[in-house]
Length: 105
Length: 102
Image 1 (spheres, rainbow over the protein chains, first blue to last red):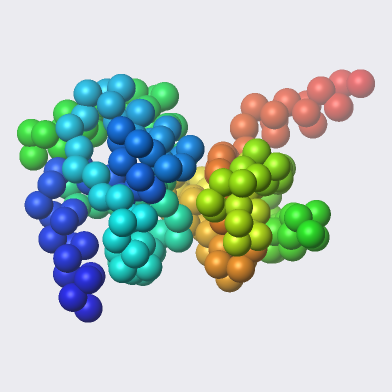
Image 2 (tube, each protein chain N blue to C red):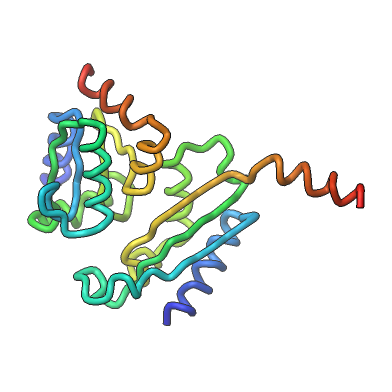
């Protein structure tokens, strides 16, 4: 239960959070890498959590978010999706808008 | 092994979503040696076109696919790239129209 509260606090205290394998500088998975690249491409400042270093988050986040895989992108406390959704939103130009609105929120 | 997995994925997705097109690609060979490939689960791409997705957000479409695959996400699938579309209304309208004119 404690870990669920910690996750909740993380997504509520940063406008944009990416739970990923590795770090934006050293991603350990192609999907995590592409997702952080898309965020960087729209100039997003985001908080990242390396789930490989936090096995308890890795084990519990899927239950919290009802989403089975990583990476997971949260904006303003809400799950946006994984790699494919982030890339699709980026290609449609919607990611840039969501990031702008997240900053102002 | 992955051929059998793909058949099971196909059966589950077909039953849950009645897709008009369904492509499942085995990407596992691209990840040999990568940490995620060592547990023996596969990497796949699915492209599902279904009218069940009409009016649903991308998030909800992907969730519907995960729900359809159920326990396979834990036992058989390490990574899943997803493309979830609604059928193109043009192709549905035009094919019967052109067919009639033949």
